[in-house]
Image (tube, rainbow, N blue to C red; front, side, top):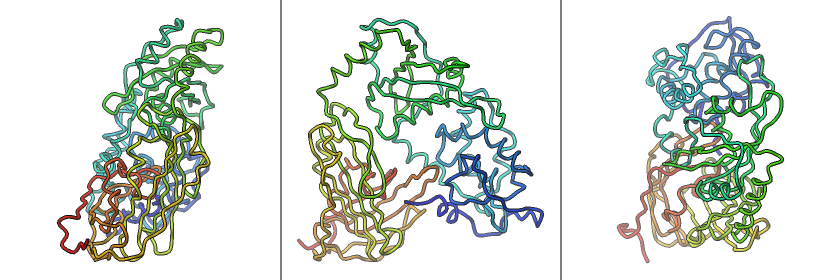
Length: 470
Protein backbone atom coordinates (compact mmCIF):
# COMPACT_ATOMS: atom_id res chain seq x y z
CA UNK A 1 0.00 0.00 0.00
CA UNK A 2 1.33 3.45 -0.87
CA UNK A 3 0.85 5.90 2.05
CA UNK A 4 0.03 9.52 1.25
CA UNK A 5 3.30 10.56 2.92
CA UNK A 6 5.26 8.85 0.17
CA UNK A 7 3.16 10.52 -2.49
CA UNK A 8 3.72 13.89 -0.88
CA UNK A 9 7.45 13.39 -0.55
CA UNK A 10 8.00 12.15 -4.08
CA UNK A 11 5.81 14.85 -5.62
CA UNK A 12 7.95 17.73 -4.35
CA UNK A 13 10.01 19.53 -6.97
CA UNK A 14 13.70 20.29 -6.81
CA UNK A 15 14.04 24.01 -5.94
CA UNK A 16 13.48 25.83 -2.65
CA UNK A 17 9.92 26.38 -1.41
CA UNK A 18 8.07 29.43 -0.14
CA UNK A 19 9.84 30.58 3.04
CA UNK A 20 7.76 32.80 5.30
CA UNK A 21 10.44 33.24 7.95
CA UNK A 22 10.55 32.60 11.68
CA UNK A 23 7.09 34.02 12.44
CA UNK A 24 5.50 30.66 11.73
CA UNK A 25 5.11 27.74 14.11
CA UNK A 26 4.36 24.02 13.92
CA UNK A 27 1.26 22.63 15.64
CA UNK A 28 -0.52 19.29 15.60
CA UNK A 29 -3.36 18.96 13.11
CA UNK A 30 -6.55 19.17 15.23
CA UNK A 31 -8.61 16.04 15.59
CA UNK A 32 -11.60 18.06 14.39
CA UNK A 33 -10.04 18.58 10.93
CA UNK A 34 -11.21 15.22 9.63
CA UNK A 35 -10.33 15.86 5.99
CA UNK A 36 -6.65 16.36 6.89
CA UNK A 37 -6.23 13.07 8.73
CA UNK A 38 -4.43 10.15 7.08
CA UNK A 39 -2.66 12.37 4.55
CA UNK A 40 0.81 11.30 5.64
CA UNK A 41 1.79 13.90 8.25
CA UNK A 42 0.48 15.00 11.64
CA UNK A 43 1.87 18.54 12.11
CA UNK A 44 0.92 21.70 10.22
CA UNK A 45 2.39 25.18 10.00
CA UNK A 46 0.66 28.39 11.12
CA UNK A 47 -0.14 30.88 9.71
CA UNK A 48 -1.22 28.71 6.80
CA UNK A 49 -1.18 29.49 3.09
CA UNK A 50 -4.64 31.07 3.28
CA UNK A 51 -3.56 33.55 5.97
CA UNK A 52 -5.36 31.88 8.87
CA UNK A 53 -3.46 32.58 12.09
CA UNK A 54 -5.20 30.57 14.81
CA UNK A 55 -6.46 27.00 14.99
CA UNK A 56 -10.11 27.94 15.71
CA UNK A 57 -10.18 29.96 12.50
CA UNK A 58 -8.52 27.17 10.51
CA UNK A 59 -10.88 24.50 11.83
CA UNK A 60 -13.95 26.64 11.22
CA UNK A 61 -12.98 27.53 7.64
CA UNK A 62 -11.91 23.98 6.78
CA UNK A 63 -15.20 22.49 8.05
CA UNK A 64 -17.04 24.01 5.10
CA UNK A 65 -14.84 22.02 2.71
CA UNK A 66 -15.17 18.63 4.40
CA UNK A 67 -18.40 17.93 2.52
CA UNK A 68 -16.75 18.63 -0.84
CA UNK A 69 -13.95 16.16 -0.07
CA UNK A 70 -16.53 13.59 1.06
CA UNK A 71 -18.27 13.76 -2.34
CA UNK A 72 -15.23 12.08 -3.93
CA UNK A 73 -15.22 14.71 -6.68
CA UNK A 74 -11.45 14.26 -7.20
CA UNK A 75 -8.90 11.89 -5.57
CA UNK A 76 -6.58 14.84 -4.82
CA UNK A 77 -9.20 17.22 -3.36
CA UNK A 78 -8.20 16.46 0.22
CA UNK A 79 -4.46 16.78 -0.42
CA UNK A 80 -4.96 20.02 -2.35
CA UNK A 81 -7.09 21.65 0.36
CA UNK A 82 -4.96 20.38 3.24
CA UNK A 83 -1.79 21.73 1.59
CA UNK A 84 -3.43 25.16 2.01
CA UNK A 85 -5.35 24.83 5.29
CA UNK A 86 -2.78 22.60 7.03
CA UNK A 87 0.57 22.84 5.16
CA UNK A 88 3.11 20.23 6.15
CA UNK A 89 5.58 21.42 8.76
CA UNK A 90 8.83 21.68 6.80
CA UNK A 91 11.54 24.34 6.68
CA UNK A 92 9.72 25.94 3.78
CA UNK A 93 6.11 26.21 2.63
CA UNK A 94 5.24 23.86 -0.22
CA UNK A 95 2.34 25.14 -2.31
CA UNK A 96 0.20 22.96 -4.58
CA UNK A 97 1.18 23.10 -8.24
CA UNK A 98 -1.10 24.93 -10.65
CA UNK A 99 -1.80 21.63 -12.41
CA UNK A 100 -3.12 20.10 -9.18
CA UNK A 101 -5.38 23.10 -8.62
CA UNK A 102 -6.71 22.91 -12.18
CA UNK A 103 -7.36 19.15 -11.93
CA UNK A 104 -9.25 19.51 -8.63
CA UNK A 105 -11.11 22.64 -9.78
CA UNK A 106 -12.28 21.08 -13.04
CA UNK A 107 -13.71 18.06 -11.19
CA UNK A 108 -15.03 19.73 -8.05
CA UNK A 109 -16.28 23.14 -9.26
CA UNK A 110 -19.36 21.51 -10.86
CA UNK A 111 -20.16 19.95 -7.47
CA UNK A 112 -19.92 23.37 -5.80
CA UNK A 113 -22.06 24.84 -8.56
CA UNK A 114 -24.65 22.12 -7.99
CA UNK A 115 -24.83 23.37 -4.39
CA UNK A 116 -25.11 27.01 -5.48
CA UNK A 117 -21.51 27.91 -4.62
CA UNK A 118 -18.89 29.24 -7.06
CA UNK A 119 -15.23 28.21 -7.05
CA UNK A 120 -13.75 30.80 -4.66
CA UNK A 121 -11.36 33.51 -5.80
CA UNK A 122 -8.99 32.58 -2.97
CA UNK A 123 -8.36 29.31 -4.82
CA UNK A 124 -7.71 30.92 -8.20
CA UNK A 125 -5.33 28.48 -9.84
CA UNK A 126 -3.24 31.25 -11.40
CA UNK A 127 -1.89 32.12 -7.94
CA UNK A 128 -0.09 28.79 -7.65
CA UNK A 129 3.33 28.00 -9.16
CA UNK A 130 3.80 26.20 -12.45
CA UNK A 131 4.86 22.57 -12.34
CA UNK A 132 8.50 23.32 -13.09
CA UNK A 133 8.75 25.26 -9.82
CA UNK A 134 8.77 23.91 -6.29
CA UNK A 135 5.28 22.64 -5.56
CA UNK A 136 3.11 19.67 -4.74
CA UNK A 137 2.55 18.00 -8.08
CA UNK A 138 -0.59 16.32 -9.33
CA UNK A 139 -1.01 13.18 -11.38
CA UNK A 140 -3.81 15.17 -12.95
CA UNK A 141 -5.82 13.93 -15.91
CA UNK A 142 -4.16 10.51 -15.99
CA UNK A 143 -5.29 9.79 -12.45
CA UNK A 144 -8.79 10.93 -13.24
CA UNK A 145 -8.86 8.68 -16.29
CA UNK A 146 -7.70 5.74 -14.20
CA UNK A 147 -10.64 6.27 -11.84
CA UNK A 148 -13.14 6.52 -14.66
CA UNK A 149 -13.95 2.81 -14.62
CA UNK A 150 -16.11 3.12 -11.50
CA UNK A 151 -19.69 4.52 -11.46
CA UNK A 152 -19.93 7.96 -9.86
CA UNK A 153 -22.87 10.10 -8.72
CA UNK A 154 -23.49 13.33 -10.62
CA UNK A 155 -25.31 16.60 -10.11
CA UNK A 156 -28.85 16.24 -11.41
CA UNK A 157 -32.33 17.68 -11.33
CA UNK A 158 -34.04 16.61 -8.12
CA UNK A 159 -35.99 13.38 -8.72
CA UNK A 160 -39.73 13.25 -8.25
CA UNK A 161 -40.88 12.40 -4.74
CA UNK A 162 -44.09 10.42 -4.09
CA UNK A 163 -45.89 9.60 -0.87
CA UNK A 164 -48.20 6.69 -1.76
CA UNK A 165 -47.56 3.61 -3.88
CA UNK A 166 -49.27 0.40 -4.81
CA UNK A 167 -47.41 -2.86 -4.29
CA UNK A 168 -47.57 -3.60 -8.03
CA UNK A 169 -46.01 -0.25 -8.90
CA UNK A 170 -43.19 -0.75 -6.42
CA UNK A 171 -42.32 -4.14 -7.93
CA UNK A 172 -42.37 -2.62 -11.43
CA UNK A 173 -40.02 0.13 -10.25
CA UNK A 174 -37.66 -2.42 -8.74
CA UNK A 175 -37.50 -4.28 -12.04
CA UNK A 176 -36.91 -1.16 -14.16
CA UNK A 177 -34.22 0.47 -12.01
CA UNK A 178 -30.62 -0.71 -11.72
CA UNK A 179 -30.66 -0.36 -7.95
CA UNK A 180 -33.01 0.38 -5.06
CA UNK A 181 -32.06 1.39 -1.53
CA UNK A 182 -33.75 2.24 1.72
CA UNK A 183 -32.18 5.43 3.06
CA UNK A 184 -32.57 7.04 6.46
CA UNK A 185 -31.81 10.76 6.50
CA UNK A 186 -31.36 12.93 9.58
CA UNK A 187 -29.63 16.14 10.56
CA UNK A 188 -26.38 16.05 12.47
CA UNK A 189 -25.12 18.82 14.68
CA UNK A 190 -23.29 21.40 12.55
CA UNK A 191 -19.53 21.47 12.97
CA UNK A 192 -18.10 24.67 14.47
CA UNK A 193 -21.03 26.85 13.58
CA UNK A 194 -20.89 26.02 9.90
CA UNK A 195 -23.88 27.43 8.05
CA UNK A 196 -24.76 24.13 6.37
CA UNK A 197 -26.02 21.16 8.34
CA UNK A 198 -24.47 17.70 8.11
CA UNK A 199 -26.43 14.71 6.88
CA UNK A 200 -26.44 11.33 8.58
CA UNK A 201 -27.20 8.89 5.77
CA UNK A 202 -27.85 5.21 6.53
CA UNK A 203 -28.24 2.96 3.49
CA UNK A 204 -29.80 -0.50 3.26
CA UNK A 205 -29.86 -2.01 -0.24
CA UNK A 206 -32.96 -3.79 -1.45
CA UNK A 207 -31.59 -4.33 -4.93
CA UNK A 208 -27.89 -3.54 -5.37
CA UNK A 209 -27.96 -4.15 -9.11
CA UNK A 210 -24.76 -3.22 -10.94
CA UNK A 211 -23.19 -1.22 -8.10
CA UNK A 212 -19.97 -2.65 -6.67
CA UNK A 213 -20.45 -4.20 -3.22
CA UNK A 214 -17.47 -2.33 -1.70
CA UNK A 215 -18.48 1.14 -2.90
CA UNK A 216 -22.26 1.01 -3.11
CA UNK A 217 -23.10 2.66 0.21
CA UNK A 218 -20.47 5.38 -0.12
CA UNK A 219 -21.67 6.13 -3.65
CA UNK A 220 -25.25 6.65 -2.43
CA UNK A 221 -24.01 8.88 0.38
CA UNK A 222 -21.96 10.88 -2.12
CA UNK A 223 -25.09 11.40 -4.23
CA UNK A 224 -26.84 13.05 -1.28
CA UNK A 225 -23.80 15.24 -0.58
CA UNK A 226 -23.41 16.34 -4.20
CA UNK A 227 -27.13 17.00 -4.65
CA UNK A 228 -27.43 18.99 -1.46
CA UNK A 229 -30.42 21.01 -2.70
CA UNK A 230 -32.38 17.78 -3.16
CA UNK A 231 -31.25 16.50 0.24
CA UNK A 232 -32.47 19.67 1.98
CA UNK A 233 -35.95 19.04 0.60
CA UNK A 234 -35.98 15.51 2.01
CA UNK A 235 -34.40 15.89 5.44
CA UNK A 236 -36.62 16.79 8.39
CA UNK A 237 -35.58 19.44 10.89
CA UNK A 238 -36.23 17.40 14.03
CA UNK A 239 -36.59 13.71 13.24
CA UNK A 240 -35.18 11.12 10.84
CA UNK A 241 -37.09 10.29 7.66
CA UNK A 242 -36.85 7.08 5.66
CA UNK A 243 -37.01 6.94 1.87
CA UNK A 244 -36.91 4.39 -0.90
CA UNK A 245 -34.68 5.62 -3.72
CA UNK A 246 -34.56 3.96 -7.12
CA UNK A 247 -32.01 4.72 -9.82
CA UNK A 248 -29.93 3.65 -12.78
CA UNK A 249 -26.31 3.74 -13.91
CA UNK A 250 -26.04 5.61 -17.22
CA UNK A 251 -22.64 5.82 -18.95
CA UNK A 252 -20.89 5.24 -15.59
CA UNK A 253 -23.00 7.99 -13.96
CA UNK A 254 -25.31 7.15 -11.07
CA UNK A 255 -28.72 8.78 -11.46
CA UNK A 256 -31.53 8.66 -8.89
CA UNK A 257 -34.84 8.56 -10.79
CA UNK A 258 -37.45 8.40 -8.04
CA UNK A 259 -37.76 8.95 -4.29
CA UNK A 260 -40.60 7.54 -2.18
CA UNK A 261 -41.35 8.39 1.43
CA UNK A 262 -41.26 5.14 3.40
CA UNK A 263 -44.07 5.48 5.91
CA UNK A 264 -44.05 3.08 8.85
CA UNK A 265 -47.75 2.38 8.39
CA UNK A 266 -47.47 1.80 4.62
CA UNK A 267 -47.58 -1.99 4.30
CA UNK A 268 -47.27 -1.80 0.49
CA UNK A 269 -43.56 -1.05 0.50
CA UNK A 270 -42.89 -3.69 3.11
CA UNK A 271 -44.81 -6.36 1.17
CA UNK A 272 -43.22 -5.39 -2.13
CA UNK A 273 -39.75 -5.51 -0.60
CA UNK A 274 -40.41 -8.93 0.91
CA UNK A 275 -41.70 -10.20 -2.43
CA UNK A 276 -38.63 -8.89 -4.25
CA UNK A 277 -36.33 -10.57 -1.74
CA UNK A 278 -38.31 -13.79 -2.18
CA UNK A 279 -37.81 -13.54 -5.95
CA UNK A 280 -34.08 -13.12 -5.38
CA UNK A 281 -33.85 -15.94 -2.86
CA UNK A 282 -32.75 -18.37 -5.59
CA UNK A 283 -29.77 -16.16 -6.51
CA UNK A 284 -26.34 -16.98 -5.12
CA UNK A 285 -25.23 -15.05 -2.06
CA UNK A 286 -21.57 -14.39 -1.22
CA UNK A 287 -19.59 -12.55 1.39
CA UNK A 288 -18.17 -9.26 0.04
CA UNK A 289 -15.19 -7.52 1.60
CA UNK A 290 -11.64 -6.38 0.94
CA UNK A 291 -8.70 -5.91 3.28
CA UNK A 292 -5.04 -6.36 4.06
CA UNK A 293 -3.89 -9.54 5.77
CA UNK A 294 -5.06 -13.12 5.46
CA UNK A 295 -8.80 -12.61 5.91
CA UNK A 296 -11.61 -10.07 5.86
CA UNK A 297 -15.24 -10.05 6.94
CA UNK A 298 -18.17 -8.31 5.31
CA UNK A 299 -21.84 -8.50 4.51
CA UNK A 300 -23.37 -11.35 2.56
CA UNK A 301 -24.72 -9.85 -0.68
CA UNK A 302 -26.98 -11.20 -3.40
CA UNK A 303 -25.02 -11.78 -6.60
CA UNK A 304 -25.99 -10.41 -10.02
CA UNK A 305 -27.40 -12.96 -12.44
CA UNK A 306 -24.15 -13.35 -14.40
CA UNK A 307 -22.01 -13.78 -11.25
CA UNK A 308 -22.59 -17.43 -10.37
CA UNK A 309 -19.58 -18.12 -8.13
CA UNK A 310 -18.28 -16.83 -4.80
CA UNK A 311 -14.66 -15.83 -5.16
CA UNK A 312 -11.67 -15.32 -2.89
CA UNK A 313 -8.74 -13.42 -4.39
CA UNK A 314 -5.53 -13.60 -2.39
CA UNK A 315 -2.53 -11.44 -3.20
CA UNK A 316 1.01 -11.09 -1.92
CA UNK A 317 3.42 -8.35 -3.01
CA UNK A 318 7.08 -7.66 -2.41
CA UNK A 319 7.42 -4.59 -4.59
CA UNK A 320 8.52 -1.73 -2.38
CA UNK A 321 11.28 -3.19 -0.22
CA UNK A 322 13.04 -6.50 -0.24
CA UNK A 323 11.75 -8.93 2.39
CA UNK A 324 8.70 -6.76 3.11
CA UNK A 325 5.51 -8.57 2.11
CA UNK A 326 2.05 -7.07 1.76
CA UNK A 327 -0.79 -9.60 1.89
CA UNK A 328 -4.41 -8.96 1.13
CA UNK A 329 -7.73 -10.56 0.29
CA UNK A 330 -10.84 -9.76 -1.73
CA UNK A 331 -14.11 -11.69 -1.36
CA UNK A 332 -17.00 -11.09 -3.76
CA UNK A 333 -19.35 -12.51 -6.39
CA UNK A 334 -17.51 -13.39 -9.58
CA UNK A 335 -18.40 -14.70 -13.06
CA UNK A 336 -17.31 -18.19 -14.03
CA UNK A 337 -14.52 -17.00 -16.36
CA UNK A 338 -12.86 -15.22 -13.44
CA UNK A 339 -12.41 -18.61 -11.79
CA UNK A 340 -10.59 -19.99 -14.83
CA UNK A 341 -7.71 -17.51 -15.15
CA UNK A 342 -5.38 -19.32 -12.74
CA UNK A 343 -2.52 -17.83 -10.73
CA UNK A 344 -1.44 -14.32 -11.76
CA UNK A 345 2.25 -13.92 -10.89
CA UNK A 346 4.69 -11.15 -11.83
CA UNK A 347 8.43 -11.54 -11.33
CA UNK A 348 10.32 -8.21 -11.46
CA UNK A 349 13.73 -9.48 -10.37
CA UNK A 350 15.71 -8.47 -7.26
CA UNK A 351 13.21 -10.48 -5.18
CA UNK A 352 10.42 -8.12 -6.20
CA UNK A 353 7.31 -10.09 -6.95
CA UNK A 354 3.51 -9.91 -7.01
CA UNK A 355 1.40 -13.07 -6.72
CA UNK A 356 -2.36 -13.45 -6.98
CA UNK A 357 -4.59 -16.50 -6.88
CA UNK A 358 -8.34 -16.95 -7.23
CA UNK A 359 -10.41 -19.63 -5.51
CA UNK A 360 -14.10 -20.15 -6.26
CA UNK A 361 -17.03 -22.01 -4.75
CA UNK A 362 -20.71 -22.20 -5.63
CA UNK A 363 -22.91 -22.37 -2.54
CA UNK A 364 -24.36 -19.53 -0.50
CA UNK A 365 -21.73 -17.70 1.58
CA UNK A 366 -19.22 -20.46 0.84
CA UNK A 367 -16.38 -17.91 0.65
CA UNK A 368 -16.90 -16.94 4.30
CA UNK A 369 -14.66 -19.73 5.57
CA UNK A 370 -13.33 -21.26 2.36
CA UNK A 371 -9.74 -22.63 2.82
CA UNK A 372 -8.06 -20.56 0.09
CA UNK A 373 -4.29 -20.17 -0.10
CA UNK A 374 -1.66 -18.94 -2.51
CA UNK A 375 -0.07 -21.41 -4.85
CA UNK A 376 3.41 -22.57 -3.81
CA UNK A 377 6.13 -20.38 -5.32
CA UNK A 378 7.91 -22.03 -8.25
CA UNK A 379 11.70 -21.71 -8.46
CA UNK A 380 12.79 -23.81 -11.47
CA UNK A 381 14.15 -21.73 -14.35
CA UNK A 382 12.23 -22.19 -17.61
CA UNK A 383 14.69 -20.54 -20.04
CA UNK A 384 12.79 -17.31 -20.66
CA UNK A 385 14.51 -14.01 -19.87
CA UNK A 386 12.61 -10.72 -19.80
CA UNK A 387 13.34 -7.00 -19.32
CA UNK A 388 12.57 -6.22 -15.67
CA UNK A 389 12.09 -3.10 -13.55
CA UNK A 390 9.71 -1.38 -11.14
CA UNK A 391 9.05 2.32 -10.55
CA UNK A 392 6.63 4.23 -8.34
CA UNK A 393 5.14 7.56 -9.50
CA UNK A 394 6.18 7.00 -13.10
CA UNK A 395 4.72 5.46 -16.23
CA UNK A 396 8.08 3.98 -17.29
CA UNK A 397 11.18 2.41 -15.73
CA UNK A 398 14.73 1.44 -16.70
CA UNK A 399 15.25 -2.12 -17.86
CA UNK A 400 17.34 -4.85 -16.33
CA UNK A 401 16.93 -8.58 -17.01
CA UNK A 402 15.29 -11.35 -14.99
CA UNK A 403 15.27 -15.14 -15.44
CA UNK A 404 11.72 -16.50 -15.49
CA UNK A 405 10.65 -19.55 -13.47
CA UNK A 406 7.90 -22.16 -13.58
CA UNK A 407 4.84 -21.07 -15.57
CA UNK A 408 6.05 -17.50 -16.10
CA UNK A 409 5.77 -17.80 -19.88
CA UNK A 410 5.24 -14.13 -20.83
CA UNK A 411 7.16 -10.86 -20.74
CA UNK A 412 5.00 -7.92 -19.69
CA UNK A 413 5.24 -4.13 -19.85
CA UNK A 414 2.61 -2.69 -17.51
CA UNK A 415 1.65 0.78 -16.28
CA UNK A 416 -1.24 1.93 -14.12
CA UNK A 417 -2.41 3.56 -10.89
CA UNK A 418 -2.85 2.58 -7.26
CA UNK A 419 -5.56 4.46 -5.34
CA UNK A 420 -5.38 4.61 -1.54
CA UNK A 421 -7.88 6.94 0.09
CA UNK A 422 -7.25 10.46 -1.21
CA UNK A 423 -3.89 9.53 -2.77
CA UNK A 424 -3.20 8.21 -6.24
CA UNK A 425 0.18 6.85 -7.34
CA UNK A 426 1.51 5.83 -10.72
CA UNK A 427 3.34 2.54 -11.06
CA UNK A 428 5.28 0.98 -13.92
CA UNK A 429 6.70 -2.53 -14.10
CA UNK A 430 8.30 -4.97 -16.50
CA UNK A 431 9.13 -8.59 -15.91
CA UNK A 432 8.11 -12.22 -16.25
CA UNK A 433 4.45 -13.12 -15.87
CA UNK A 434 2.10 -16.07 -15.90
CA UNK A 435 -0.58 -16.09 -18.64
CA UNK A 436 -3.30 -15.04 -16.17
CA UNK A 437 -1.75 -11.59 -15.81
CA UNK A 438 -2.69 -10.92 -19.43
CA UNK A 439 -6.31 -12.03 -18.94
CA UNK A 440 -8.68 -9.05 -19.41
CA UNK A 441 -11.06 -10.41 -16.78
CA UNK A 442 -8.68 -9.42 -13.97
CA UNK A 443 -9.07 -5.76 -14.91
CA UNK A 444 -5.89 -4.76 -13.10
CA UNK A 445 -7.17 -5.16 -9.54
CA UNK A 446 -5.32 -8.38 -8.84
CA UNK A 447 -1.86 -7.40 -10.00
CA UNK A 448 -1.21 -4.60 -7.55
CA UNK A 449 -1.31 -4.49 -3.76
CA UNK A 450 -5.08 -4.37 -3.23
CA UNK A 451 -7.29 -1.41 -2.22
CA UNK A 452 -8.05 -0.06 -5.71
CA UNK A 453 -6.14 -0.01 -8.98
CA UNK A 454 -6.50 0.61 -12.69
CA UNK A 455 -4.26 -0.53 -15.57
CA UNK A 456 -3.74 2.01 -18.35
CA UNK A 457 -1.24 0.02 -20.42
CA UNK A 458 -0.51 -3.71 -20.58
CA UNK A 459 1.66 -5.36 -23.22
CA UNK A 460 2.15 -9.10 -22.91
CA UNK A 461 4.42 -10.97 -25.29
CA UNK A 462 5.69 -14.51 -25.59
CA UNK A 463 5.76 -15.61 -29.22
CA UNK A 464 8.09 -12.84 -30.37
CA UNK A 465 10.61 -13.31 -27.59
CA UNK A 466 13.63 -15.18 -28.99
CA UNK A 467 14.91 -16.09 -25.54
CA UNK A 468 11.89 -18.25 -24.70
CA UNK A 469 12.73 -21.93 -24.76
CA UNK A 470 9.85 -24.40 -24.73
